[in-house]
Amino acid sequence: MTIKRPIQVTLLLAMLCTGSAFADGVKVTANGAQPSLAGSSDYSSGAVVVDMLFVANEYSQVSGAYVTFAPGARAAWHTHPRGQKLIVTSGTGWVQEWGKDKQVIKPGDAVQIAPGIKHWHGATSTQGMRHIAIQEAVEGKNVEWMEQVSDDQYAK
Image 1 (cartoon, rainbow, N blue to C red):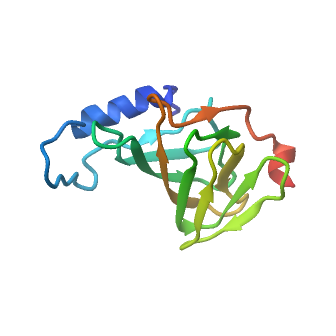
Image 2 (image 1 turned 60 degrees about the vertical axis):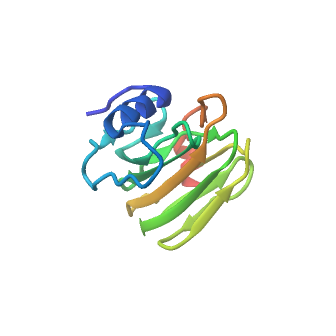
């Protein structure tokens, strides 16, 4: 099942699930307290699951999520206004900057993507991959989605 919902709505849902406003101090959101979200077919190909870790709030415009890609699954081409950081936690994947060769990413690898760089990331064709994605919003928007990664682009 694919849930089609813009990223801002997804983040709003996550904020409602976690309570974006909290008093100064320490807030723990228990593992499993938030529902997993199916990746939208508008922004990805294949089976993708997003598990929000934290969302932007009045203190910080940074959000983070576990993103799990089944073999062959990948994000569409996209950019981030303040860049993105990925930390691979399991499996094997690929990341590619527009116009450059794709790179293999494995558990423990940290990927830094500069602001405005058109890129995609996802699993290899034979292995799934999970990473933590961290990005910052500008005026409430943390990603600009573009076209899907074609099968030819993915295979190169």
